[in-house]
Length: 192
Image (cartoon, rainbow, N blue to C red):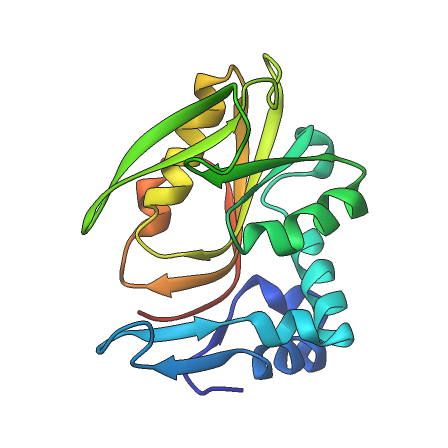
């Protein structure tokens, strides 16, 4: 396990499993550009034991009881990799929150600002029902821009936000604070 990974709610799967899962995370210095320490969790998905521990950890660390939400919304791209499996495990449906132009029309979208420009997330126009309670999941919370835009989009569609669940949190970027007062869980954290 990298010495800068801090086990948070992942401890709910037990010390040995938590340490095993954390050992699968990779840090790639200088990717995708100089000065960035990219946190890669793809090795977790490639490892059957790691994937099982990940799903168990996400389920045990839910920020709200499973009966408090109707569906799981996964953010493109890595939220798509474990979001459907978590939703199935919980007996919930899955909502794909995609980058602009990836879904067939009609769609509903939400624009948001990145540190280097504008971006947009979209869902199919009938993906969220009025009053539907949604848990938003993604691999990483950094500044919170994409997760906040997804929450704004779910609300625009008539849904309500039950909470947020992340695998990793980058410390010092205040991303969770930007999401507002919603219940939030993270399995591990590490310096930005």
